[in-house]
Length: 404
Ligand code: NAD
Ligand code: MG
Image (cartoon, rainbow, N blue to C red):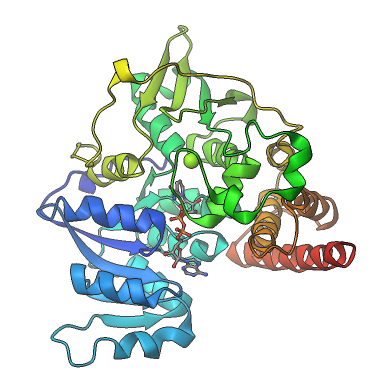
């Protein structure tokens, strides 16, 4: 947990200025809710969005950030004109450069990295290079970066705090002992909407069914990842990197109620668990206030009314994406980049009904087998491998579609 360092600036002194990358998404909106409830502690400095300029405009009028970024450069003018005639207009930037600026400007204290997918990597790295407190929701950025993001954060005394509910839970449970005393990490998984679906019905599931998660309301990409359980695979990789553990020290257990968010097992047989109702405001409030605590707006658990909590082993035949993530972990180097990029392409194609749900693992498997694995040295290599994999996955999908 080297980069989860408590630097001198970790204590909240005065108002912390927060940039939210991906403000219009599910994590972004929840972050704004927590910040709004603690206006004496946090101020919104920058908000960014990809294409949803309508919501970004509304958010700007409400939270009055100094900076707004529209990642899709073609929409910048349309966004800018929305402010004409008003008494307020943020400084408006576009594209990747704009995102990196929002993540690294001198006035920024905290960066919520909540862009979905590989698109968030350069700005998250920029935040690390600028030594910010990074609230990391964008797991894909970490997974793709190999040790690059962790090293960058460490070198520039950035503080990296996990927002993913499992990793935030692990981080909280880690305070129960020293790093050497930790025997294993147990990540819980809900199993998603298809935990009990007969396997012969998997080929016909629709994007709407896949996005209807039983416990969490999330963006569409992570919802599909939860349905395939690739999300848990990505989270195993994320945990290895954040907590510097071997894959063999990380266990996944199905827990359909999503009340226990993860556990840490110690050498003396003790196991510490983190419990909360499934609501992202809990980890967001934790990371915003750390090492203190603030209200998240979520009530504590009423244990007596909970009913039973169930646990079981994941079935890798039912969820081949989880197996593929373990395979990628075994192969070192660029395999995580390949896994992630192929998954992003496959999920996008499934969401537009181009391929079937059951074809998602086939796209990823083919990419892992055929795209050349290399040792990753820098961002340029990561982005090149990401592009190569996307080209491969697109070709594979076009062939699959022709075969339908
Ligand atoms: P979402 O789809 O709801 O929102 C994504 C945000 O990223 C939006 O603001 C969008 O404008 C922005 N974005 C999308 N593509 C972009 C691009 N090309 N360039 C710049 N910005 C772009 O996603 P989400 O559910 O909020 O998830 C965000 C991240 O947090 C993901 O990495 C996800 O895995 C992680 N996460 C989410 C949850 C959750 O409960 N939603 C939980 C744990 C982790
Ligand atoms: Mg999670």
